[in-house]
Amino acid sequence: MGSHFENICEIKKSDQLGRFLSAKRHIKPGEMILAEEPIIVGPYWDADISCLNCLRSATRTCKKCLKAPLCRDCSAHDAVECDFYEQASNLSKNFLFDHFNTVTPIRCLLLYRRDRAKFQQMMEMESHCEKRKGTEIWNIHQQYVVEPLMCEAALHALDDLEVNADLLQQICGILDVNTFEIRGNMDSQGVQMNNLARGLYPCTSLMTHNCQTNTLIAVDGMSKLRLYASVPINSGDLLYYNYTRVLFSTFERQTHLQKGKYFICTCARCTDPTEFGTHLSSIKCTECDAGLCLFYDQVPKWECNICGYQMAREYVNRVMCDARDDVSSCALDIRNLEKVIGKHSKTLNPHHSLVLEAKQSLAGELRSLCMSYDTQNVPRQALKRRLELCEEMLTILRVLDPGISRLTGIALYEYQAALVELSRRNHDTGEITTLDLQASLKTAESALKEAISMLLFEHPTTPEGHLTKKAMCELKTLREDVQNVQAMIEDEQTLKKYSLKGSSNVKKYKK
Image (cartoon, rainbow, N blue to C red; front, side, top):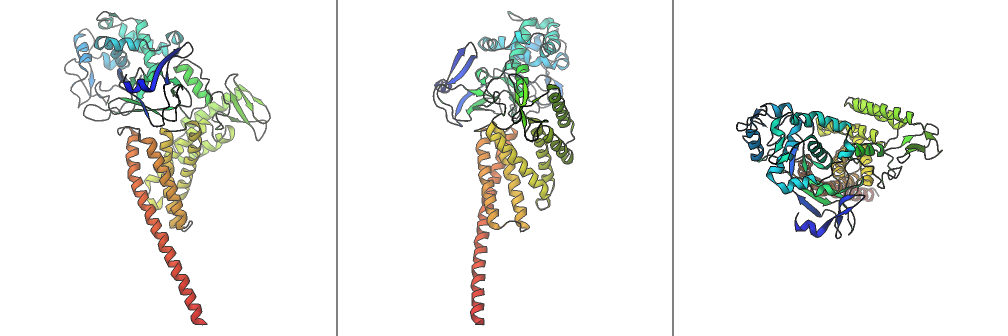
């Protein structure tokens, strides 16, 4: 841990939270708090078989150990790992291909040989083994990790470390509870991998959960994680990270956290039935026309904010299942998505999380549609609808994910792109004046600058990193367009001036 981090934060401990991170001083938005290398990187649970060096698609086996999957471009993988598999002569040559879910747990075991201090650091991390016992995920790990490893004599011991079922379940728990997604990982040649990976970052994992985070995580192309403040953090404040999804409803977030992190969240958003006025969990009241049945998680119940009617849990479950089935099974077709949105905006509400999920899919389809046309031929209705969806999403994200936000940055980019295209079209057809066009382009320029300021923290190898580069090029073009429109306005004003003067001279002549 570097001195930079130690000057900003400290690790504290309490009976309620365990170990957690607290700010030593005021931290400004965008300020880097921590840069941390992972002690373990590996494929996600249930990932496709991939190269153990770069995690791209595997096409062959390592020529040295004769067991590790590699891609066509990688001739070797980690030396400690390779030596272990080479020495395990009684391990089946196809073991890793047949049991790819064991790759990351084995890497955790090999940490004992590679770096005992880091192995001990890993084993001190929370695993929630007692809460996991007998659960579905426990049984899955038992079948796909523990039993395959225990069936191989080569894996019963590592140096003086006894490997047993309890140790393996603890490692699986540590990985499930503490790892972070790595989306921009690259091999040593700088080629981006295909599969998502997960990394174990001991210090970053100490952050307390809150559904409204105050930090932003970005992982670079070589798996190094950087932690930034997304909003002002005062001295003494805890460092928070949202371990679930921003646009999940309270019910969905609580379910996700209980199953994956084994706790119930009591943050301000979870205890507010309106979710800060966004109503991602609220359902239209069937008793009155105007009310919304709010979700009270502590009970749990859905109660109308107008007439006080308590909606039956059976009805709620039926409506939610119907919406979830429609959203998940809906063909990615604009007409079908609009039908799903219209239907469930009436039974749930226009901002319910499941409706928003359908709206996100619709926005993606509209983007693809717009890109398939020449600029002059894009259907105007598609542009208008795309703009409406972006504005709606931004309104919600500003509330639920304030400050520097990856999602808000992407939404801002999509918003300005739709606004620019629609404004140009409307100007070409004479529906708006050149002054109106200028105002719209300036609004788009401001949105694009804000989007870039939020996405600048993303590494160039990630999709958001590529988007940032594209946005920077488009910002230059947009600024030129604003200048060109200004010149058009000046020309129009000059023409108008001379036109009026000419009209005055004609009147004089007639007299």
